[in-house]
Image: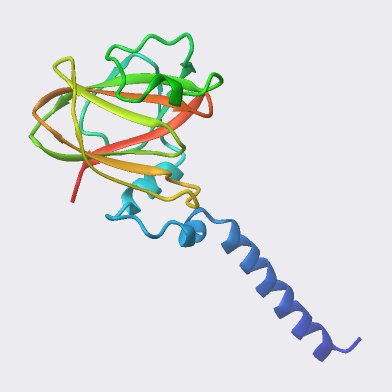
Length: 178
């Protein structure tokens, strides 16, 4: 084989290798993460980052959040939630998982979006009462973020409940909406 025959093959192999690396990179898979009603690029970045904060059900964490929370859930059939969920009981699968955490202190009132990496119902409560959502968006095809829900929150603590998730852990992001 001559030197001229080796170089084109080497270039082709290098290009193929680069494409494989790009295809496996977290940001490359964002093609299916379109169609949301509002920007979720920050959430996608936080969900894909390795530095998410591991939180057990019942934990209290400080605000503001600047990364995803990896919430460890418990079987839905045995988990007692602090606030009665807004989801109908029959909609929660018997093999699903649920849990919650409290954000210690929201500094200012405003619209906040809570996003999940997988399916699940989101409840937000303040002062022991559920806060009605103001908007919802989601995409079943997106592997990083499944849904995002907006709530009008007042200053103070906020309870975040996840109900009916398919796995024992789920990533959650909470941030002020743009």
